Image (cartoon, rainbow, N blue to C red):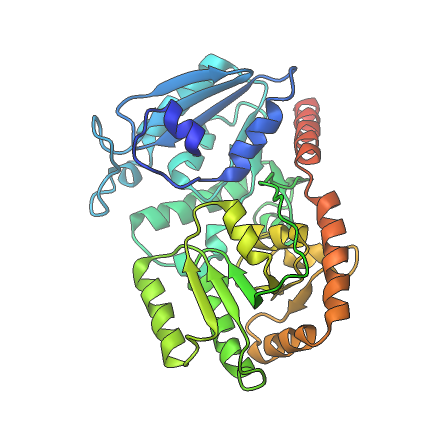
Length: 387
C-alpha cells in the first residue's frame, strides 16, 4: 500500500505505507519491457475485488474481511483464520490459473492470511521471498488463533517450499534447519533511497528511528542514556517512530521517572521519510539495539546518510561487516557494552568521520535497487531452468 495504490483503489481513509520494499520493487520492474508482472494482494477496505493495469504491471486486489463492508473481521470473530483463509486462497488459485504465469513469487512466509495461498500453487515454479520470521519473534510467541495460524503456516512453508530469497546468513541457516534441501538466492529487498546526507551540523548526540516496541530495544537505549548522563549531563537523544499508544505512554513515563525529559526529544510519528531523515541527520550516532531483525531499514538508511551506527549482534546485522567494520556491533542485551561503545564513539570525532565515510560507501554499493531486481530476475531464470 502507498498513496498511489490507495487512490487507484478508491480508498478515502488514510493508510500508512505498507511493505514499501514491494511497491518500490514494482517500480523497478516497470522499467523492464520484457516482463509482465501480476501483483495479487489482499485488502479489507474495499467492497469488491478491483483490478487495473499500469504499464506492464497488472494489479489484482482481492477483497478480504467482512463481506460488503469496508472493514476487517472483529478480533473476537476471526472468521478468515478459523477457515484457514480458504476463501482468499480459492480466489488467488483461480486468478493464478487464469494468468498461467511462468513463476509465482510469494513475498513473506509469515503473513498467513495471504502466504497460505502458496500451498495451492506448488504446481508452478515458486520462489519464497523471506521478509522475516514470526517464529523468531518472541513478542508473537503467544496469542490467539490468528497468531497460531501465522506460526503454523510459516513453518509449513519453510518445510515444503524449495526456493527462497534471503538477504542474511541467519535466514539461510534457519530455513535449512527445517528443510536441508532448500535452495537459497541472495537478494536484497528494495527500499526507498534517501536524498539526505549528514553534514557537520549536529543538534543531537544520538538518534533512534524505528517502530516503538520492546523488540526494537528502545527501553535498552533509554536505560543506557540514564547511565551516560552521569558522564555527560547534557547528552541528547531524539526518538522518532510510531507505536501502540499504551506503549508510548509507558516510554514517556519511563523517561520522566529517570529524569531524562531534558535529554530526550520525543518526536513520535514523523509523516514523511524525508522529514525523518532530515532530523536523523542532525545526530552524531544512530543507535538501534534491536533484538530480532533481518537488515533493518533504520540501519541501511543511516549508513546511506553517513550516520555512524551502533546495533546489537542479531539477525542479518553482522553481515553488514562482511567487508570491514562498517558499523559497531554490541552483544545483544549487554547494556554496559552498549554504553561503553556510545561513549567511546562520542569521544572520537575522527572515528565518527571514518565510520560515516566507510559505511556510506558500502551501503551505496550493497543496497542498489536496480541490482536487487536484476538479481531477482536471474533467480527466476535459474528456478525456471531447474524446474
